[in-house]
Image 1 (cartoon, rainbow, N blue to C red):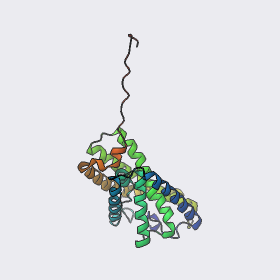
Image 2: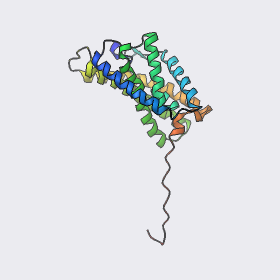
Image 3: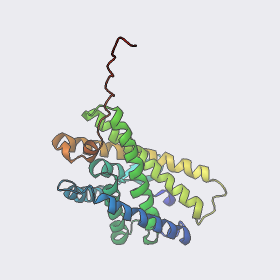
Image 4: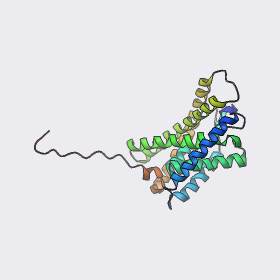
Length: 239
């Protein structure tokens, strides 16, 4: 069951694959820094610090998944995407992962590129894409915002887990005997349950912030509601 942890430990994936994903993570995070600088203002900069601190604190709290014999915690990609956007959000989650690996040994230092790719990059990207879709079709009420936050968090956790499956297929150090489908199904099932917990935490947090300071919710500011096309007047009796 140790291989089900989203924080990949040293030795689970071989060195060359870990190095490739470390380079990939570094390149994407560099782009996030450059792109995120455009979004930073007097609201987003302090909010980014608060989001990173909140994710770090909540990740220390594990909730048990009794049917799987493992425990889960908030990954934070959807929460960060909702509150500070995809670029700064990915950086917030990445910073938390680095601190956890270096200070608490949560995930191998050599596997940081893999963990950042899964949780900070894939998870945040999947969450924000779904957020952008749902906020254009759902009403921007507390209920609509809660559904958006819950679904994006749930999907982001499952997507992040499948990133691990891809990485294990490329460089897993233990032979699964061709049972990669079984690994994918197990990871998806366990992280679907974890995603429910993450969705509840994310929805509660985002709705609470939106009720007090909706201007601090990046997704509400950046994603404008869909505007129906204006009717074209008909002239001269033409149909």
